[in-house]
Amino acid sequence: AAIEKGGYAHFMLKEIFEQPTAVFDCLRGRLDPKTGSIRMGGIDKHLDLLRDAKRIILVGCGTSWHAGLLAEYVFEELCRIPVEVEYASEFRYRNPVINPGDVIIAISQSGETADTLVALENARKQGAFIFGVVNVVGSSIARLAHAGAYTHAGPEIGVASTKAFTAQLTVLYLIAIKLGYSKNAISQERYLHLINELALIPEKITEVLRSANQVKLLAERYKDARDFLFLGRGYNFPIALEGALKLKEISYIHAEGYPAAEMKHGPIALVEEGLPIVFVATKDGYHEKLVSNAQEIKARKGSVLAVISEQDSVFEEIADATIAVPAADEILAPLLSVVPLQLLAYYTGLAKGLDVDKPRNLAKSVTVE
Ligand code: G6P
Image (cartoon, rainbow, N blue to C red; front, side):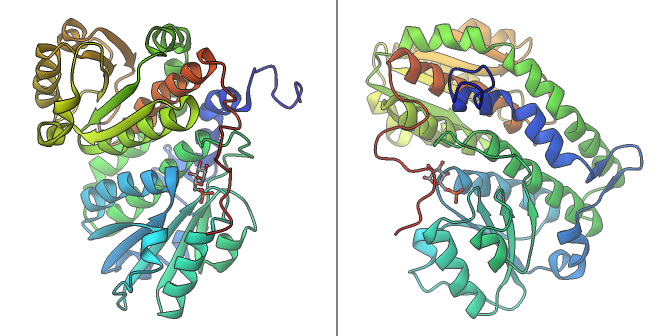
């Protein structure tokens, strides 16, 4: 088992560190910054159908659902196609309206999650076109889909999903950038800019991983907290949810993710001295608003931990601790900002002496209802 873990203490840590490779492998053969092209078999074959989709419905569970939530923001921004995101377990039972021209994008690491599989079977019977974003080749969901794109993240053993998530996001970005450009929803300039930025992500993740020790110290400092809040806005809102989910799964600390502006409609009541609140606050159009949210927390004596862009002196001043990630286009920043949150969950679980690769009560793949 030590050999399988390639020198890492746990699969989870190994898989977090494999993310530069996972994202690179996912881009390989698809993205070519030199020619400014994105080639994906499953998309190219059905380009007209996908480009003319009246609506996209993203379906998944757990971390895969979070990838869908981020994809909603990305597809609407880049493709101007209306998007809905559904928990597979709800979608399969609630008699959803599916119209001709709707495209369902199914997101699943394992390709075997029972709720997702049945939701897709139902939708397929109603005539929906199913596109799979799946990691495990030949899995049930991959076989059920009319078309798809594999995430190529390699086997993921740790129960909590890490590299499969960043690979899912990478595939979804590729699809959105490609469709957006072929629909003329984005300019050639923006298209080429996004392609170049995406190609830089693997090395930027490598840079983020250099802060692992710093995150470890943070985890040790806050490991006895009873609750955590994670706040973000826009593209970083789904990342706040994912950060909270990871921490819950691995450290058993109660954690909630929230859109930062919703804080005043509830979670702010929980803020008191010592409550750690993680801001996912890379520089984007919401930055000033997050700064004022963080000031509200400080006024109530909460502890502000923040994932920020490099050289953000404003946040450094307010926060009790910061982890910096390299600058990136704001739409792609989640591929960087999620990494310190995965590390935070890992090191918190580790500091508490828990079984991070196999947290209690959870399964890698939920093949029963
Ligand atoms: C389980 C796993 C999660 C995963 C979810 C969906 O809950 O523990 O890590 O995100 O299932 O799994 P899938 O294989 O469909 O992505």
